[in-house]
Amino acid sequence: MTECYIAPPCLEVLRELYRDNDIVVVDKPAGLLSVPGRHPDNYDSALTRLQAIEPETRVVHRLDMATSGIMVFGLHADSHRALSRQFQDRLVSKAYVAEVWGELEKESGEVELPLRCDWPNRPRQMVDHEQGKSAFTRYQKMNSLNSHGRVWLEPVTGRSHQLRVHMAAIGHPILGCSFYAHEAARSAATRLHLHATKLAFVHPVTTKTLAFDCPVPF
Image (cartoon, rainbow, N blue to C red; front, side):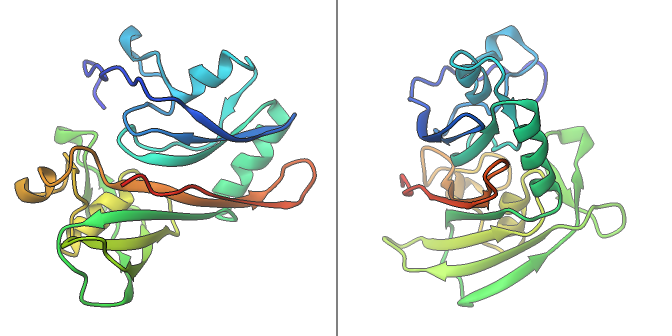
């Protein structure tokens, strides 16, 4: 997102899935920023809405504005630090569901293509085998509800736009993607059909494993 971009207002509710004294888990709607942008008109976000309830709320990870689904936030410095470490060490289990252009031929597979920012066209990312950072995604074909493909995605790494770029790179761009889909795929949906449907991690204080599932809205 460039500095001059102003996000349209998001009128959907930020639904809480879980809250205790240490963390809060939410279902972020598509169209809502994860954190506020630099422009004053981009102040509304999942983080600022949660800080209106608990000012000490801290962001641990992000979802693209166009992506919906599960996010976890720390409610104090210690929980934020412990959760952030889990994400950095790739100890968190994450899964997404996407609706893509065309039916996948393989039942499952892996995409390992290094990514870097396409600076002249930022925030777009691009595959670059020389300067890109490693990016690894596992996918599994799902039963489709219509003529488009449906796929379960597990990002091993967490690069910006990783799932969008990887699916487009193998010829199955995500429907409604304004950055990487061709016109037919882009216009096939009114929003990006990418949803963070599952998140599992160790509670930063109780050390119990917590797992959350969130139904796909498309």
